[in-house]
Structures are given as structure tokens and as C-alpha cells.
Length: 72
Image 1 (tube, rainbow, N blue to C red):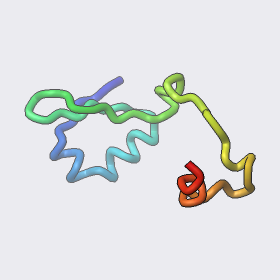
Image 2: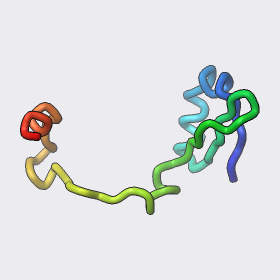
Image 3: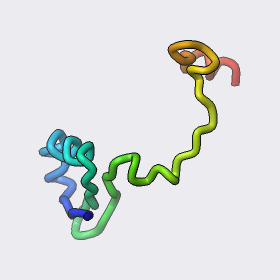
Image 4: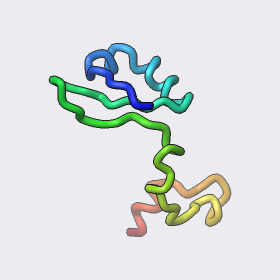
């Protein structure tokens, strides 16, 4: 189920909405009666994500972003 929430309401109560999203709820954020974005748990849209590389397989604990960027 998707609920509508105003942008001002979201800004004023962001902690409440974060916890609701973590529980699995989704929200359409509105500004001036127009939808501007959707808040939803990542698992809900998991088919949109594709794992490219797991940096923990290269080095335990991952790779520092500075090291990665310096090699590009």
C-alpha cells in the first residue's frame, strides 16, 4: 500500500517515515499536489539492483573509496 505525504511533513518528521519504511511501508512524497518521489524499502524494488562486484571478496572489510578512485 502506498501513502501520500507532503514534503514539509516528511522534512519535519523524517525519523518517523524512516522507521515506517524500514517496516515495509511505501510513501509517495508530494509537493504542491504533484508527486516528486517515492520512498520505499530497497527489498521492494530489489529486481532493479544488480550486483556488479563485491569488494569484500577482494579485501576483507572492503576497499577504501580513495584507493578505488585513484586507480580509475
